[in-house]
Length: 251
Image 1 (cartoon, rainbow, N blue to C red):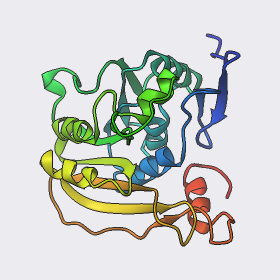
Image 2: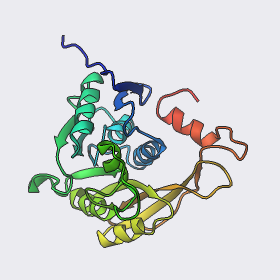
Image 3: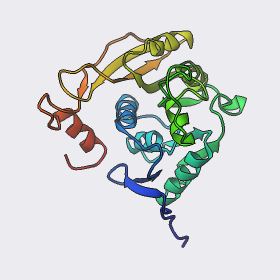
Image 4: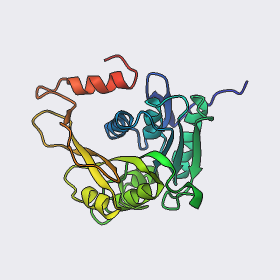
């Protein structure tokens, strides 16, 4: 029996779902609420998906959490350009015994794969960086920089790639900054239809910080009520507890 991977001195192994764990850098980019709400939205929208893809997969948090909602026959392709994130993701896949369900690809998702794969995915997910390179300060930490700044494409690239990968009845789910008008424009530019936008409030009564977008090639738009992580008093709210339960944790 092959020994399971273990975290190095600069890594941590953290519980991702009730069943699976994820390797992360202690001082690098780490999975967050953004990833959780993306996977939750995708899982609710397409629990029947069999062929999945996660573009710009990072350490694999969105992809694995999305797969958590699927049946055992579902498989996924994780595409990630950063060597460090790809390496951590590989450790997580081995640790969780997911080698038979997840294919890891090290490369730029904008060169998504063989022509034969285009139009073959039921569900595509993504968590794009939110900040154009000329609109913020780039972190000196390479992994953090690539996850936060648009060094390898913007939400337009994510939507264009997703549209190319999706089946005619496929679904694309991604997260982005609430105040940024580009996500809705990018959806239209890619030939997709926005079916649902859900804002996420980290505290009740405050403006949303992030929003989750669900889109496809047809249908109409029906926005969902916001998710509220904390009450106005600062306590964890029912929505946060519901997310934990959905991920296999006790509320």
